[in-house]
Length: 186
Image (cartoon, rainbow, N blue to C red; front, side, top):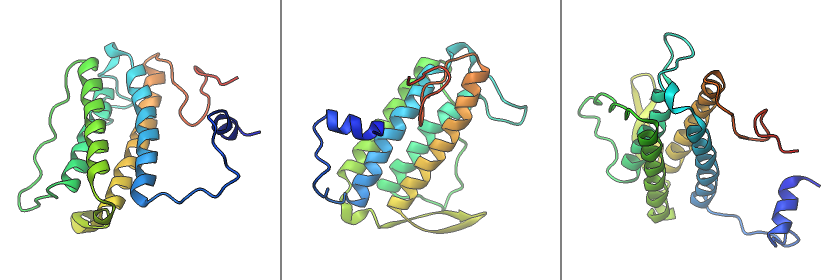
């Protein structure tokens, strides 16, 4: 029997009855909670003394990749609150904290703020649009829920990059979508 069914049955879930379809917002929150928990496992597993590691000279550092998780949540916050003001050019990305512990704390806080904002945003407003880039130098109307999914997918992409850095830095890669060499399931 697949493990996800076994776990659900162990928790008392009854799958013999049709489950109500969650709202688009709830589907996003379910994915966000699952994926951010996994991202935090990778961030926390990263060796604190290897933050400046780069895969190649033109690549971002591990510090920069981890910091991107927090910065992108700032974009989610803007989308869910004030929207973006494109009358002014975007400023320079804020500098990442120096210590691994401060980066972890900032990423955790950013995820918590986004989660709280999504939870309090009415379902009826998730289809409202924000102006954001849809092509090079081209702004378009993007529904908030699609923008949130875009950021989550980008987080997953950068988490994959960070997991490679983690292996290069001599850290142990946690399970992400199944067992890893460092965290076997059987």
